[in-house]
Each structure stands twice: as structure tokens, then as C-alpha cells.
Amino acid sequence: MAGLDRKTDGGPGARGSLRFDRNEVAGALGDLGTFIPLLLGMVKSCGLQIVPALFFAGVMNIASGILFRIPMPVQPMKAIAAVAIAEGLNESQILAAGMVTGFAILLLSLSGLIDFLNRVVPKSVVRGLQLALGLKLAIKGGGLIVGTGVFFGADSVGLGVFCSVLVGVVYFSKRFPGALLIFSIGLVALLFDQPELIKTGAVGVRGLGFSWSLPDLTNSHDWIEGLWRGALPQLPLTTLNSVIAVCALSCDLFPNHGASPRRVAISVALMNLLACPFGAMPMCHGAGGLAAQYRFGARTGGSVVFLGVLKCVLAIVFGGSLVVWLAAYPQSVLGVLLAFSGIELGRVCRDQKRMGDFLAMIVTSGACLATNTAIGFVVGWIAAWVVVLITLKKKSSDSSV
Image (tube, rainbow, N blue to C red; front, side, top):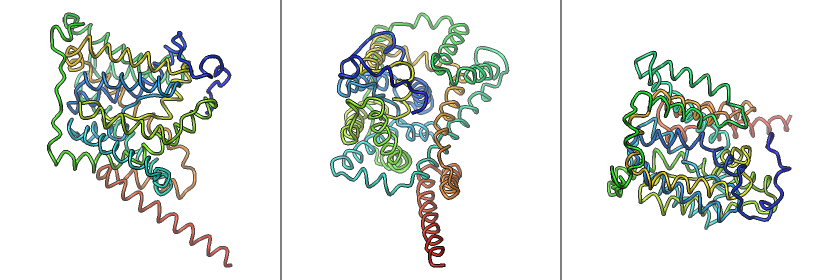
């Protein structure tokens, strides 16, 4: 990975110990650029419960740091989150998608079929899904900014434009997590506009209650929607990015104790099978998150343990007051976070440089945008294999001349 300093991978981290110094704390914030906007988006747009989502994300951060001993990230499942926000899935459908994906990954890992799935789903199709999902998030974010209806104020188009410019300035910075900076600006704007919210600060359990209820997972329609619209497009992304890619990167960055695909796959499966029934958001690991945390200074599992403790404390101490804050959070700032999260998701598509792969990616993305993600996935898969067959036929014709 270009730009990652491997020279600092020595010391206690190389032996698999946990550190909690300032570099680990800084590294813990490196992946918030994905976590914050997708979590906020699912809470505000889809009715996902903030307390169990934040609490279980923290628990899984702690478990991942202790078990893997490296800064293994815990992220929202991007395909499920993007579809949920852009297409309006409800809480039960989101959780059903996470559980179905977790069960499928568990079967694939235990049977050894995960490598087979990685082979039969062309990379161009996966990139097409990521491009479409990124565009959907960007469009959704832009709609939130424009939807404020005012040009100046604590929640306005002007604030959205200012935050967009600021994100562009710090986008490539290794010292300033752009999402955290923009999120903080949103909080300042919120308190400036509604200072009475300070009274609903750390009241959590005492004041507004823990705000945690078990989700309803008895509706068969929600399971079908979760499978078709959420799990199906998520599965290839999980196998490619949350298992194969993150393991390869971990071995590159931490050659003494890189993670194995089977172990990571089982971790992803158990996170969702154990936590989603209680209202946790669908979760996975990811190569981008690992690279981001490493870039900001994380070298051991101590970074994600620290982050996990912080998330759990926020969920327990603030409890239901988080819902009040999120309900009032400026949608113009949330729009910026979603838009740039979408751009980041789409950036990985730059590696499709061959014309056939590029066309398959565009067909997949276009079909996703024109219909929905599941249909787009099927159309793109067919298009990719048509490209393969045409290429093989052309090579056969050339060799016979």
C-alpha cells in the first residue's frame, strides 16, 4: 500500500501485544470517515436504533483488537448501509440482511467455498456495485444539503458548501480525519442553534432511558427484502474486501501475525449472527479501514480496543439522549458526510483499466442505478461473463489465423 510507513511496525506491535499510546488513540479515529456517516444515515433515514448499533460496534471492536492483536477495523457493511439509506430499508430488513450475510459467510468459510465465490464473481462486477452504491450515497447526500431549503444558517446549503470545501482541503491529510472534523462542526452548529440540547447531555439511563428494544424479526417480507436487496449485493463485497483483501493487507503490514481468511470470515459471520438479533447494525472488517487506521498511527489491537470502549461508554452513558441529538443534527452536514463517504467508496473503481472490465463495471453500475442493487448485480454478472466469452472467442480466432 503506497503511503503506508512500514518502518514503524516494530516494537511491541510486532509481538502481538496491545499498546494504548497517543499513536494508537490517533489511529483509532482513522476509520471514522466511513463509520460516522453510514451509522448516522441508517439511524436517521431507516430507524436503526443508535444505542445497540453503537454498543455492539464497540463490543466487536474490543473483541477484534484482543483476538487479532492488530488494528482490525469494525465497519458497517457498506452495501447494506448504502442500499438501506438510498432505497429506504427499515430496521428489520437491515438486520435480516446482516444475519443472512453472516450465515452465508459462515457456510462459505466452513466449507471452503469462499475462495470459489471470489473466483466466480468478476472483480468488475464488484467494482460496479461499489461505484453504484457510492453514487447513490453521493446523490442522497446532495439531496439532504439542497433539501434544507435555506442558504444560510445552522442547517443550510451554505453550511453544506462550507463543509464540502473543508473536506476537500483535508481530504488527503494524514493528520486530520476529515469526517471527525466535519462531524464536530455539525455539533457546534447544532449547539449554536439549539443550546437547550445541552440539558439532554449525559442523561442516558437516568433521563431518557436506555432506548433499547429488541427488533421485530418475524415478518417474512422483511427477510425476503433483506436477502434480495441487502445480502445479495453485500456478499461479493464481503468476500472480496472484508475477507480476501483485508487478510492480504494485514500480512503485508504485519508479516509476523497477519490474519487468515478463514478466521476473518468466521469473525464477520459471528459478529452479525450474534449481534444483529439485538439491533446491532450489520458489521464487517475491511481493507480500507485497516489502511486508514494504520495511516493515522495504529500498530496494535490497542487502538480498536480503545475505540470500542469509547463507543460502549457513549452508548451506556448517553443512552436515549443520543436519539434526541441525532434527530436535531444538521442534515446539511450529514449530507456532506454521506456524499464524501460515497466518493470514497467509488474511488476504488479506478483499477478497472481494461476496456472489457470497464464496460462490465459501467453496465453493473448503470443497472443498479436504473433498477436496484440486486437486479444490477445479476445484470452485471451476466455482462461480465459475456465479455469473458467474447474475449476468449477473439483469442481463439487470433490463434487460428
